[in-house]
Image (tube, rainbow, N blue to C red):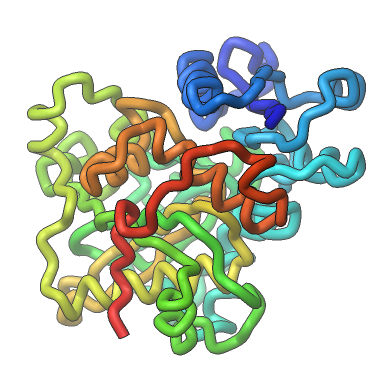
Length: 376
């Protein structure tokens, strides 16, 4: 199969285009693109890598890919992650991962939360601030958490994101509005354990309303595989005063796996009932937002209310940086080498698109290696 790996890499980020120092933290490194391309090449595919910009309009037809492995985060706009997939659909070239609508919806946290509530998925109550002087919803009580409404990878999340009074709230909302040129999302702070759930696969009828109830039956049909739940240990939150998984922590390269192990637990030591509820919420979130092939869902356990889980957000385009990305460490905990994770995502896209095994020529990742966690 001829595969084009598409990404926006940090060295090609627009110069002087943002006031925020972490504006391009989500972009991939050339090393990540090379690692993915190498995994695909070792499986027998013909691979070329391209920057995800308007140059694709001419470059892709010349290369003639059967499929694009999409990593593009985009640079500008309120739906930047959906720009390259929209272009691919105009060119009628299939691609891995979430589609245009799912990427646009999932990037905008307030829209995601509205959708999750409509599907009965538990998420912290919140309010969107487009101006510094907007009145605070009286139903929201401190402490609150403030972050940009359309960022990922912990961009804009710092120690000051947790606010305990009106004065701190106004300062933090002003910081987000000015530095990131987008509304600020203010939500009830859920104090407790922070988890992330890696998902590989696909579910039928992603817009079905009763997502949580239908999850187990679909999983038994071979749809969605859950990687070991990953916990950011209390020590891992010390850099933020023990309260937030900041961008600085998320993008730290843990070359020393023992050192990383002091800050993260995978699999997370959870009671079976709690783990099952977390997994079901993650699957329901995947389904409600219409994600495809792979995703990662961030969850917090509310320690003040018996560790009830709340979905914080979903990443429909989770990072695949070796030695950095949460999803890669979750796969490793499941006994899944990096190359097999990449090929597993590819295999899910190939099956979804009906491209066929012979055309894919990729090593299928056995479902048991992906550790399906749903038990009916």
